[in-house]
Amino acid sequence: MTSRERVWATLEGRTVDRPPVSFWGHIYHRESSAAELAEATLESWREYRWDWVKLNPRKHYHVEPWGVRYRYPGVPDVKPVLEAWPVHAPGDWAQVTPQPPTAGALGEQIEAVRLLRQALPAEVPLIETVFTPLAVLGEMVETPGELRAQLDSHAGLVRGALEAVTATYEPFVRELLRAGADGIYFATVDWASADLLTPAQYRAWARPFDLRVLAAAADAPFNVLHVCKRRNLLFEFGDYPVAAFSWATNDPTNPTLREALGRFRPAVMGGISQDGALQASGSGAALEEYATALAETAGRRWLAAPGCSIPPGTPAENLRAVRDAVASTRLQTSS
Image (cartoon, rainbow, N blue to C red; front, top):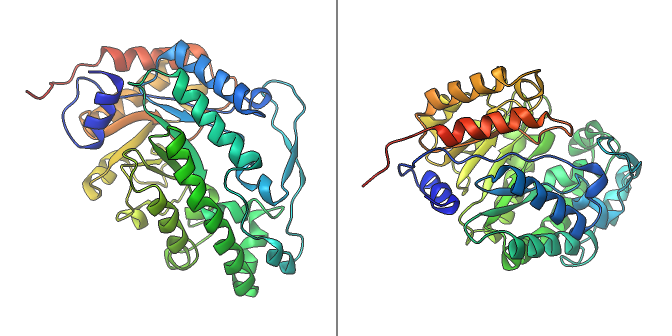
């Protein structure tokens, strides 16, 4: 099977020759322009021949239109440092207004998708990272706790900002698809965790806006919902219109792959712990996690992947070992 055939069959619940696999992560010193990001992403794909490419842009591109700025030291593997953010007092939410969806950092990401789609073989699906509107607001304050408090104390102002962000991201997502993306990797970041919100609070503050952005991507075949962090609210999203769910499946506070497959019709994505097994000395732990995930899913409706983006400096030998283990897996194909 080609990579696209394998991914599409997995998403549709059909039998595949082997599970599709992909990994992704930040390259801090090469993510500040469309050309650099596209070339760094291509280098990783050429090295590992992943079945799909998840574009992994700088974490703050989505809030740069509203004035968020980070300082990059220019040193490989060193995280950028927050320098400026727009909301210092509750009244500042009123200044969060809709932004042009094709200008600045958003236009840069559209160009990165265009460059990647031109350079990648047609058989390799491509998805772009987009954050949920509430997660975007969470990057406009210095700490998530500030936004959490203002959901209660200044609800009207926060809802106005959510509307502005959603109105910006609806056309932006449509532009990503026009540029060649096969879907979006829609990430909740901190906000779909019981550490911050109850299920009822998430339904009130995030769900309506999430669904509007997903509606803008409705024509795409490969939309993924990434439910981040521990104690996640994964089972709140069973009716979201996505092709797959991604989460930290190895965290003991989160559902397992087997549990999710029993509850969801969409495919599941994950199985390898990006901060644990992948960082171990030697590939044994990562291969054990791959074998466990394969046993839990029988290789059906499962895309082998990390639970979140892998840290810079992840040992290449561990990535190669997982890739090779997947490539040697043989599942019975349908007639």
